[in-house]
Image (cartoon, rainbow, N blue to C red):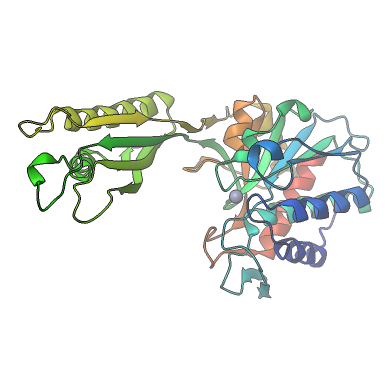
Length: 378
Ligand SMILES: [Zn+2]
């Protein structure tokens, strides 16, 4: 059964050239609704998540009951939003490679996934090939904190296992991704005129600097990382700063290590703040407020799970080997797994994502379309 590369290329280009920054996915959602309606989808739902995400549309759920193959239902997931700069994309296609013209990202992340799924479905329908029940979940606001997935009601899907088409690499499945928490540390000092009464102030910036200097950042162990990525505070060059806020994150493939590293960071901040020398006559010592909101939960699929067994069937039908690997990022799949929907992530060949040099090869998209067809028929 032959994938049609020309049709796939033109689908991909038209998707990339529809603007869909986070919270403005509505035009793309409407385009997808029309397209799947024409293809004969059995049900198309737009959920109520817009009220929670602030997007101009909800997540899309598209259902095909299947055509004559009694396989376990599966779903495929892509996100509709694209990281900035992504407005006014003009696609360049040369020697089998898609790129933008340089001012924007391409948006292959994640429109490569959308185009691959559309082509796979069209191929099955055109050739009247029997296939199993399938659903598509197209989310909003993935790039700004997985908001669409977080606001999604898992009961809207009947499939319990699925695949997110949202990774670099080709012919590879990501079956493990870290859990992550944000770190938010606010330090309060005491303001005073820096030139006239320096002895009356406590510099929150100096405290923060000492605390950060003591932290272990970067790679913490073989499966955990930490970063302080934002710092803000102070009011003027001649005022001793009475407040500073630091924001960062810790991620780990082990939930217990994640907790241990978070506690270590809090202990370090607390020690520096509590042991800070308070000038004589000042009754107000510096204080710390420390929070670690959840960013996303762990993704850790068992090699024997039905979601991965199905990949093994599909890849052997194609005489391919699809390795299972762990990756360092968080995506919608982390959230979907936390709902009890076993979700693996498939590499779709996109490269240099989140930069204006982003590319994807047509050959790789054809290969992934073949894999989708195989997942739906074996
Ligand atoms: Zn993505």
